Amino acid sequence: MITSQVERISPGTAEKYLALNLDKNRPIRPSTIRDYSNKMLAGEWVPTHQGIAFDQDGHLIDGQHRLRAIVDSGVTVQLMVTRGLRPDSFKALDLGARRKMSDILRIPKTHSEVALFIAKMVVGHNPTTGQVERVYNSISPSLISLLDGCGTNRKTYSSATVKAAAVFSMMLRQDSAFYVKRVYHSLVSFDLCDPNLPMVAKAFIRQCETNRVGSQNQRDLFARSVALFDPSKEHNKKIQINTESMDAAVAHLRAFFSSICAA
Image (tube, rainbow, N blue to C red; front, side, top):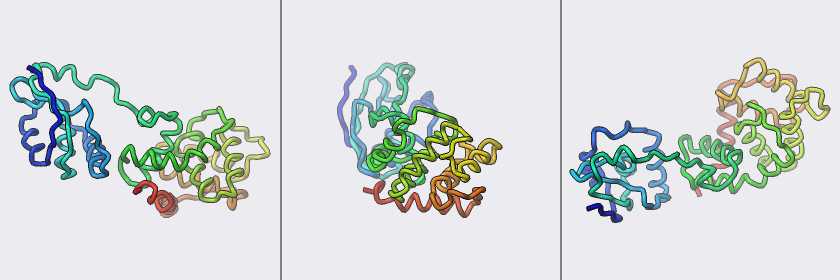
């Protein structure tokens, strides 16, 4: 008979259940364990119908990531525990697509990507849903304003990294919001003859087009984008970035949003 009930699982109980783990279970994903553990430590873990499961022989066939997160976090949480499944039930588990942050927060993907980028930069690891949501709530007015009337998407120039730098710049210097929007819109339209395109934007485009910077190096791209959206650098013909300036740009972002993520 299959039974399900919510149980309070302590780190000690989690270790006992993990000792019953079925060898055929999928490989451990450390990033998933960190994600679950961060939620538990932040008090954001909510029990759902998904928990852990044992087969008729008492083997653990689902939930190893949740249990390992309990051990790592040292937090006791509630989990739905199902017992009495057929031994071959593991073949049918977790075949659905994992929900993305945009699905969870019910916001456009282009918005969730920016909030997620900022949250990751601030906390230094995969942020919890609550941290991403708090960042999004703080940036949404500026982000919506930035993207208003800008339907163009262009690789690198309209990436989450560049948008995050633009939003950060708009919030940091509110009197420069119009300048940032003008530069961003001109940039993604990729019109090099646009009179609204400042010298620093042309330098940014040259660097991107000659592969001096790309979306793969997010810290570098973010630091260059922060310089791009700084009105005081409007007439600069070059954007020079090194490890020090990258660290400074990320540190500035972290200081600005740290209280929001920690709230």
